[in-house]
Image (cartoon, rainbow, N blue to C red; front, side, top):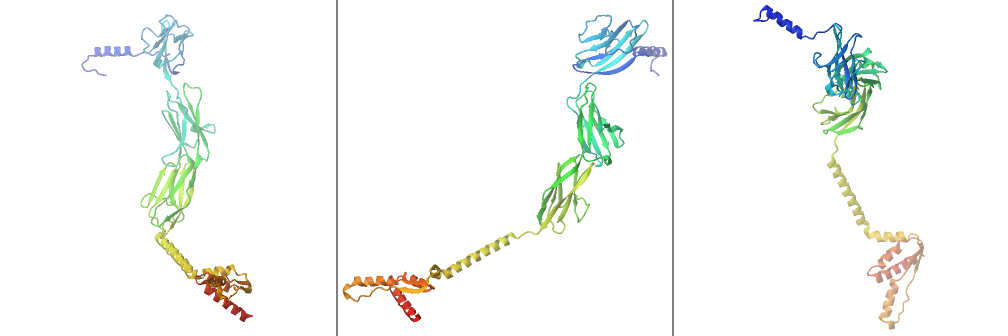
Length: 436
C-alpha cells in the first residue's frame, strides 16, 4: 500500500497508529443480541466470567469510556434501575427507549481482560392480531395464502399450518416468501379442496403467546336474475353474482349451446362490467337471429369453478299504436250497435213491458160498461159522467194470452182516451161475440 508524498518511516508510524485505534478482541470475547420490552425488565449476562476475576465492569456504548456504567468494586452514582446480579450480570428495570444500544462486560484479571458484548434492542410487539386471507396468483391457477401482522419491532415470525403441520415442509408448496411483517405461501391448486382450512401462527420475541388467524377456502357459488326478454333493436342486461368464493372468483361470459366455450369479449354490441362480486353483460341492438338463447356465467378460482345458464328471449316489437287504434274502433262499433238497437226497439218497449207483466192472465175478458141514460135533463154533468165511465172501462183477461189488453191500456192513457177507449171496447166485444 502506497501513500503519495510520504516516506517509508512515516508510513510505518501511520499503520501503527491505526492498529492502536482498532478495538482488540480477545479469543475469549463473545457477542449476543437480546430484546427488551418498554416498561419491562432485562438481565444482561456476563458470559464466561472466570472465578479468578477481581472486578467486573459494565460499559454502555464505548467499552473504553470512563467512568463505566457499573462496577462490582467501585460505587458510582448509580441509576436505581441498574443493579448487579451475582456480582457479574447487569439488571435493568423499567426499560426505556434510550436504553437501547451496545453494552460491554469486562472481567479484570491479573494479566488479561475478557470481554462480552451485548446488543440490547428495545422491542415492541404488534398491538393487533395477525390478519390472513387467500388470493389468486397472477397466473390465475395457484392459491396464495397471505398472513400479515404489522406494528411490531422487530418484525414478527409468521408461518402457515394445515391440520397441525407446517406448510413449509409440505411438497405441494411451490414457494414461500417473507417481507417485513408479511408472509406468503403459494400452493399447488391440485391439492386443494372445498372448505379446507389453513392457519397462520405468529410469534414475537417479547410476546409469550402465539396469536393465530384462519382461512377457509371455498368453491364459487352463483346466482342470477330470472330469464330476460329483449325486443329487436333494444338493449338488455344480464346479471350474474357470486354469493360465496374464497379466494375471489374470476367471472366470464360464454355463449351457451350455439357457441360453447367461446368467451365473450367486451366491445361492439357487448359491454361487460364487473363491480365486486357482480358481473353484468349488456347486449345492445338485440337481434333475434344471433342473440336469442342461453348464456353461461362462469366463475373460477384455484379451488374450482361453477357455471350458471342465463337465458334470453328476443321478440319482435309490438305495434302499440295499431293495437290502441283497433281497440278504439271496436269500442265505437259496440257503442253504435247498442245505440241502434235501443233506438229501433224504443216504441215497443212499453208494449213489450206490459205484455211481460200480464203473461199469466186468463182467456176470459170481462167488460164493464157504464150505464147509458138518455135523459137529456142531466145536461153537461151527465155527459161528463158518461165520458168518465168510458175511460174507466176495464178489460180483464183471465187465464189466457194478454196481447190486446196492454195495447188497450197504452191507448187509453193517451190524449184521445175517450174515443180510443170506447172504440177498443166495442171491437173487443165484437171479437169476443164472434169467437163465442
